[in-house]
Image (cartoon, rainbow, N blue to C red; front, side):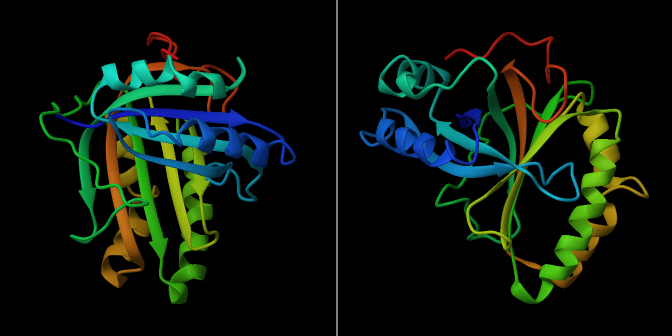
Length: 238
């Protein structure tokens, strides 16, 4: 069975963020049943602004099933839930690819087993994780500025965020797209993100690379834009 993901972004001040991270770690200390992996990392606006601005904390949890996730959120984990303005999304890993056979995201190897491909007209969440080689840092940062500008102005962009643990070398982008077609237009068409992707492959700029296509099943709130990311979906269950 494909991994089920819950993504929560807590919009906290810089001063409040350490306390938030401590409360989340405490809630997960007992490792809820069915939890495959988790990451608690800092979040910023680096996916759509040239100068990143801290926004708080991103909690991404990978579960064996939706039932396991819902049960955990009704337990101690629910006590760490943020406020009504925070972002929440549930989704299924529909496609998982790694750049090298051994690549992981903080120890997690995503599983897309049994998931149906996302249709071109379906909304899609894209998760890209990479650890850049030091000698290619300037190249990566230059490409990232270009990609951020293109994403912000793309009509299919429905919000995004940058997640990091060891900046500036380790980054994860989570972006939401109105359709898979729109995401592919941004990624592959001339003038989009294609030159950066081609350069990363040809020069092997990253030590680690993980790419996910996620089918969003429920969504609450916005992620870097002024309106709800996916208002046509039911609210995320927490």
